[in-house]
Image (cartoon, rainbow, N blue to C red):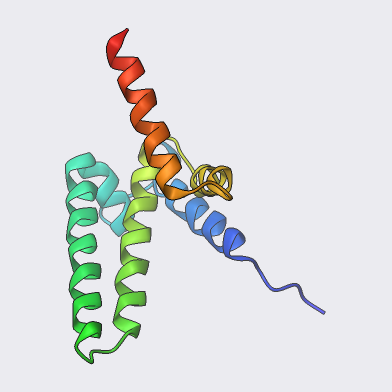
Length: 126
């Protein structure tokens, strides 16, 4: 019986593919969309993240008015993908994001936000 890959496995696999598209790993901007985004630099993939985030919002608003909810999934997948390109550019991995989410488990979102604000205030006062 074959094990079913976990979500984390799928993200790790996609991250490895993205990593392989970096110029230092032989990524060719003429042959790969990811290599092209990375070659163009942060402005290119950050712009895509903004566009995809907007498309998530629009798909959700459409769903609120009877639209197809599968479009939300499609747009979130695009958002995650382009976010993973950004992670790779900055030397980060999906596992880093998962670790942060796990760290937050059991913590109230309101408490987490208040803590981040307190830490930011402390850093500013130093």
